[in-house]
Image 1 (spheres, rainbow, N blue to C red):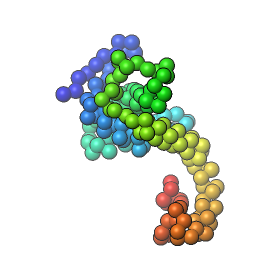
Image 2: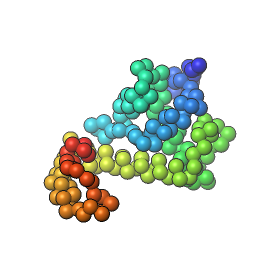
Image 3: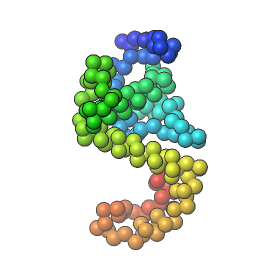
Length: 164
């Protein structure tokens, strides 16, 4: 059963995450990360909706604030795992201790998060103008690839349909 917790410092309400919920959310956010809105800021509503779809539920009992907090805690936890001597260490109050994140998993999440942020912020921003300017070059390079090339994609490749 979920319990409603009052954060007296921020005067907000949030729902406690069970261990199973934390594990599911960690798996989700490791692959998806945080989308950006048109202003280049995190789109927590979109993350919440995608997570709700990922779980296949109609009503998610987590607020946008809950989602933002757990994402930030996961990222801090990954920094702790990668750099055990970091200033972020707080082992006594580690709410994510049961996740058992390995160094490799933390590095992968950190790398994917940084890479997706760069792609979303730099390449897909401004209505994907930078991406659209390179579509013809992508098509041309794909046609030139040999079948034994690791980047070769069998069938007809259309970056405008498959990459956007």
